[in-house]
Image (cartoon, rainbow, N blue to C red; front, side):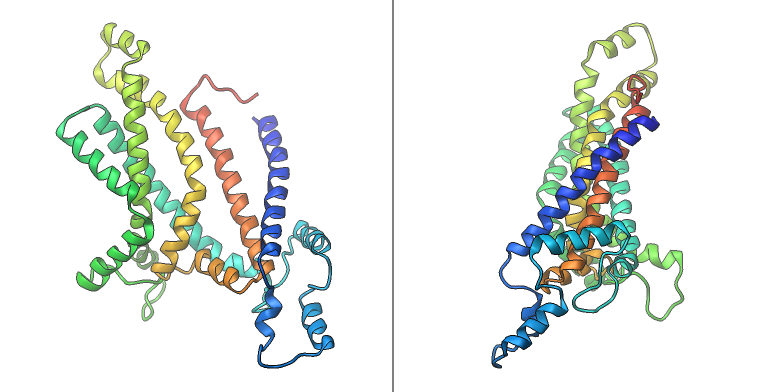
Length: 318
């Protein structure tokens, strides 16, 4: 296990470097730079003034030199300072990262638990009323974008019915508490999980139908094993393997969906911070946030691979 973890961690290093290079190159290829925010188009600036503005942000160096400087500082845990606020990037990300992880982890957990449970339920009842009804609803959940369902939920549950708060993470006039945070979390996490509930249900259903018709399941049934034993010992564990793969592949789209949900519900996470950074061409903040996102995705893929060994005892990590 330790050797496998070491190999995976070493293999993740070039991937992480490649991601940072690509992001840095994309930012450089975009027209303009952050210095444009400080230049009034109605005022004629001297060459010295323009040079001073660019030197302030380190833009006078070539792009490869600036990337090497950033990467060197990042290895020491210093991702620079925001061009706009002047705050250390690590502190800005640290204040928001926990909130985003809470939202995404809750949405993913709900999506997996509910989606897999429904997939097993309808997989055992092929072409029944429940199968047809839930399959139709899953198509709607998959095709409905998160920002559309978020806006509809915001209107229905906060304005029309007044069941949940309209945004934020805590109430303004009450002391912070776990219950208050959960109350604010229910609606955004629930909306973010809708697409994953539908996706995991569809994949689990398909996998269940494939495993049920396999030879070893028919053999177990022919030996006289109880239906409950056949389902939970032989069918469900084998049907979960492709679903685990989908869980790992869902993390990047989960990050993108969280950006929209955090914006709609004013959730103080990395989504709104990322949009502000992109809009203002705040390169250190963009690079820092993309690096953190890449680390989260790589960690999720590693955990997905390790989960195979828990579900399938035939898999060994030597």
